[in-house]
Image 1 (spheres, rainbow, N blue to C red):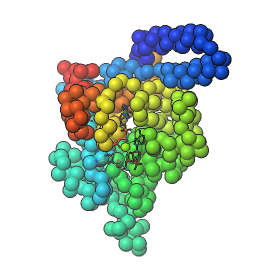
Image 2 (cartoon, rainbow, N blue to C red; image 1 turned 180 degrees about the vertical axis):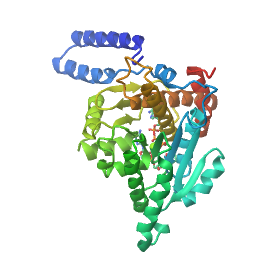
Image 3 (tube, protein in one colour; image 1 turned 90 degrees about the vertical axis):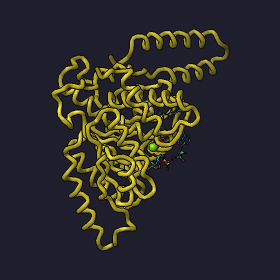
Image 4 (cartoon, rainbow, N blue to C red; image 1 turned 60 degrees about the vertical axis):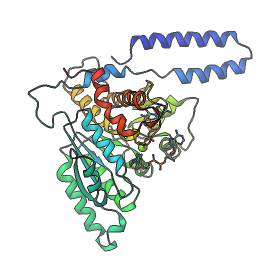
Length: 361
Ligand SMILES: NC(=O)C1=CN([C@@H]2O[C@H](COP(=O)(O)OP(=O)(O)OC[C@H]3O[C@@H](n4cnc5c(N)ncnc54)[C@H](O)[C@@H]3O)[C@@H](O)[C@H]2O)[C@@H](O)CC1
Ligand SMILES: Nc1ncnc2c1ncn2[C@@H]1O[C@H](COP(=O)(O)OP(=O)(O)OP(=O)(O)O)[C@@H](O)[C@H]1O
Ligand SMILES: [Mg+2]
């Protein structure tokens, strides 16, 4: 299931071709450089991502009740950003989660509610400007207590889309993350959540249920902070694996032309062609998608159905599935809308893309 046989034979063919090319060309140093660069770019195995989706997506069984297909929460949304948490939360629903909550600031809540009646929106976060210095401790205890009432119901939480970078708010979110960890809830960390984590790695170190989803800049900052080095184009795979290892084996999905995924043990990639449009918000869809698939993958792995695949990390399965679905939906939207493609168009293609991989009936 994990690697398609056509992929591995294609890889063998490519290795053979490169070895042949290196053997027949001229100066020794350039052979070595060429081999290193080419081998680095082809040695990451492609995941059989659609196969993963077919395995982990639950049947639409008539006996199931509301909530069984997933309850997702997004912690994000502030004065500046209301689109990002909406994209994440609505994507989770469109893919098949039963319930999608958003915990955001008061200013953002009414706006997010007005985008969709499907979302359950909690206006409980506060930014520094709305809380007096002497009230901060009380307010942060209140926020944590409110969120604690809900937290254990969720199958996965996403921290960061549109969260902003207000220090008081990020302090409260750190407490929420610590509590989620105690409750062993999987957590996808994106956008401003990554800003928070990059400045306090201990929040995620060793958390085997954490997924970081950095974009190009977020990855660069994470590398600088943790490995004190710049991005290597020569050996991206090993660098990613070492980064994950240094943070205690957290799963990292490095977004880019190819999405690279590692949990310190394995590195895999999804490179299905998506869309050439790079409109903002696609990473937000991805975080919602990864959250749903990760909760499905955990159920799948825990159900004991897979025998040889039991050792697979459900977080990796969730990342692989989320990545390919977003890319397929982005392609569908682009073919229809071309240059006018927006994130909302891609969201509209999530259902059809999933249907093509894994029909509902
Ligand atoms: N509609 C919305 O409300 C949206 C809000 N967003 C939110 O905006 C906030 C800031 O997120 P940002 O992603 O802008 O983070 P940053 O503020 O860290 O900015 C990232 C920077 O990297 C640049 N960049 C991205 N990809 C690059 C590449 N391949 N090569 C070189 N530079 C590249 C971007 O242009 C941007 O300037 C977050 O809270 C995020 O969730 C975004 O998710 C986009 C949509
Ligand atoms: N150059 C690229 N070519 C093809 N696909 C890409 C490219 N860059 C990113 N993607 C795809 O778009 C998705 C979102 O990645 P991106 O880097 O845009 O995230 P982001 O910056 O966090 O987005 P957002 O605007 O939501 O914050 C990734 O999963 C990846 O599959
Ligand atoms: Mg982002």
